[in-house]
Image (cartoon, rainbow, N blue to C red; front, side):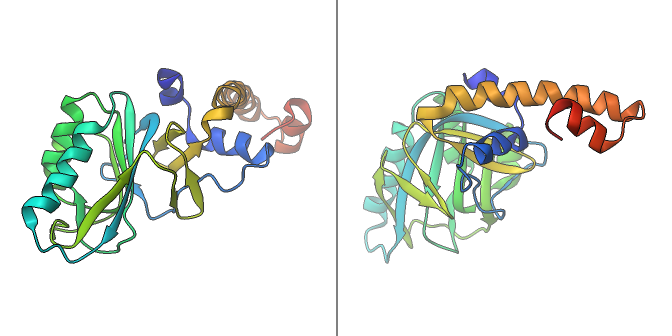
Length: 212
């Protein structure tokens, strides 16, 4: 399923989710890929954190490193940081996840070392970038628990798909059906595109194919 999700675009997924009544599945528009054109797909490995004044840097960094070492291969680490400053992810974090086969990282927070991450090709989406480290300012409080990013509740194992348009969350329990319908929609849109290029009006195309 990860290969199939990696080939489908987020707009098709959101259209299918909307039609099923799941209309709050897109992460905040500020969460963007570090490198334009980046794609990511995988099941969510959720990370919850909070701002705090860290008195023991060693203890704080150990929490983060233990979390990074627990992310599963093929999964996307999804951070709910609840913080609008400091970088929660950097080049060594990306190197760690890449070496473990994790599919990527989506951060409702900050990132740094962006040039090094870009050169590695590792898929990272974040809300903002900053050189400021989070270790003195933030701590991991839980992993693999339900989290909320923007208006979206994310359960461990939900499917995360990101591209140049943004990031969408597909609930695990309906993922197979949503994916199949999105693939069918994408195939139909190819037919519509060809028909419109050949002179069919948009309304005629909609009436023939039932979508646009």
